[in-house]
Image (cartoon, rainbow, N blue to C red):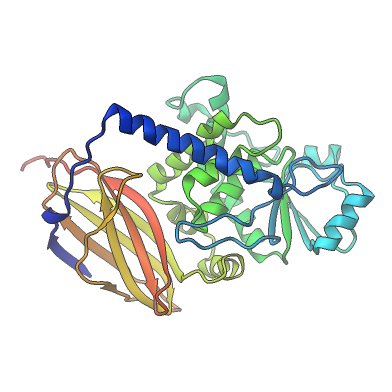
Amino acid sequence: MSVKTNNAEYRFAVKKSSRSISLVLFVCIVAFFSQRAGAEERFLPLEGPENFRDLGGYATTNGESLAWGMVYRSDVLSTLTENDLDYLNHLGLKSVLDIRGEGEVAHAPDILDPAWSYEFYPAVPDEFSLDLAPYASICDQTPHIFTKYYCAMIDQLPDRVGAILTKIFDAEKPVVFHCSGGQDRTGIIAAIILLMLGVPEDTVAVDYTLSPNFDPSLSSRMEQTICHIKDSYGSVENYVYNVCYVPVEKFVKFKEDFVPGATLIELSNLQAIPGKHEVVIVWSTSSEIDHSGFNLYRSESEKGEYIKINDALIPAQGNSTEGAEYEFIDGDLQNRQTYYYQLEDVDTAGVSTMHGPVSATPRLLLGN
């Protein structure tokens, strides 16, 4: 469907003084360290592994909360003690997914309880060498070598990323997935899962920094990686569904269990395409269960105030077995001004979930 509208009345100017910028910076710093302050409850009190923590409890952009005690991330499990095994059994742990390389597993095999299901699936096989050359534009400072590694893993091994996500979604819960340090390969997988579930990007970046003895200022590694996914693939959802080929129904079931009360609309693509004095927002769904429709919101800054730009709810076109494609033209915009958009889906019970933001900058087109 296509909707043409004049949204001039929704445009507004944001004036920033040095005082307001300082205030915003202060608020951001306070928020960052507030998120880290509650990190202790995520770590399990184990004698061996130092980075075994819960992915639950985070709030989504829609105000929902991820369930505790379902999905864990960790460093190597070769240091588990008898007390640790008893503790994890008390929590009901069922499944372990080991994403280290063969050499790492041979050197330090996991210590496991016989009742647990164990699967070994390397995120980066020993025989595969990631090519970092295409990422020369990323800062060459030593800390950012990891960003190149993360981007290379995402671009060059989407089949491995997709298989790992699917295995986590399918696993009997509670499940733990881990590499050696529980930070890099595990961090990428954890970030994608959290983003897919609607956890804000800044929260995902903070979660990445929670590993023991990790400098919280290096959250920029994950921030750059998230930007790379969005710049290269349009959205995390598009990457997961259309590049990694994760079956939509696998994630739907996982989300039902992990985010109680979430809407069951699965977005497969969300893009903002610039034109002359306009932006075309296009999106598509893979499935829509008990869905009423969509609202679109625009802002002139990514973290600014978003104002609804559609006059009436954009009606749902998909159903539980097939999705639909949508298009909305946001017109009468200023060229060379970047606009940010969020998409809200609303189910029949009135529960809504926000997606985005995506951005575009209207421009003069050649020949016009």
